[in-house]
Length: 153
Image (tube, one colour):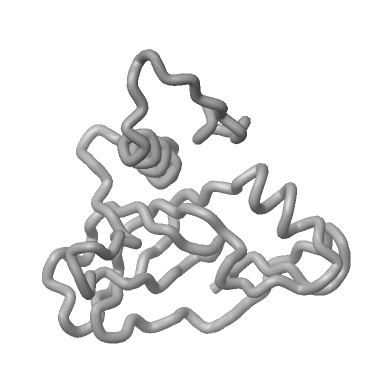
């Protein structure tokens, strides 16, 4: 399979061939359909570094289809359309079983009617909504938004 890597050297981005990963206990393997590139954290930060960056953080959000389940995964099935916080790769393995009710999911089912072009934006929307909710912002409050990307918008 192919995945994006960032070897040493500023703006040095490459694609490498590696074995297809196998899911372990509580994990699913996803065959990618779309992968979202973050202009800020990836293009503006990771890709411009002089040093190499781990392939595990070369990515943001990926939408695809589950093609393998690890032991103990009961909430998903092969063929499910999902979005995941995952690196840019043909196949990714992600945790699909939460260890506590407070843990945030890394894999979420794609709602009916949402296509693969829109699905990778889930973490941005979820983050923007939850960050506004936890701050208890009211109509008469003054708010400064520092992010100028999709979340800031």
